[in-house]
Image (tube, rainbow, N blue to C red; front, side, top):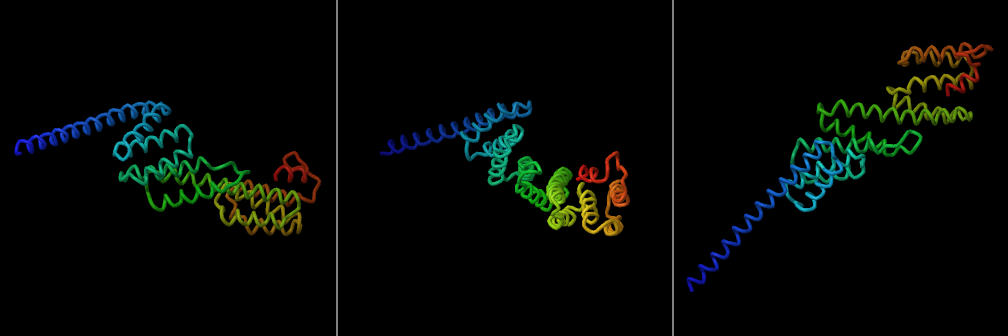
Length: 265
């Protein structure tokens, strides 16, 4: 009876040792495979690296190496301009990783993916608003991070895009003599995006509206009241020239007055 117990115990120990050995081999295999993937990634062979990282995520699911591979998989997708999948992969990585440094990086990369997914200004700007919000949240949550400057630059680009959208809509309304609607968009631009590249253009457009609807005196008064808000002196002087010369049959920059306004707008 005792001999039978010893045989069972020995068999159990052998299975345990074999299992541990198999587990160690599995870990070793995954680490070697991961190193190959990293080599491809560092050589900027992103398509090949992506395949390796995908295999690691699938075959070694739940392991630490699989979580690390997920970060690099997302990075490969980003480099391959697959921004939708990259965004999702970074989000999954954030859910499972405990690496605080890479978590911050992944959060920023999600913002960059959202930035890249925004459309040109004539198209729908829903994605632009979302990207702008996420970048602002990132800066608030990680003040003074190494990504701060780039995040601020991206925010500036997005704000300029939204300002341009409003400016272009306002111009269309001016050209169709729908001045009240034009003022709404110009007011939104000057209220929300007063520090963008298109704020001075909006002020010039506003002076033209006053010139057309109320005359040169009202336009001059508007320009005088807003002179200090112009960041470009040349644009202020240009708008002022339009108002001063509006009643004269002279050329501004080689164009007659009405032709010049049409070109300006």
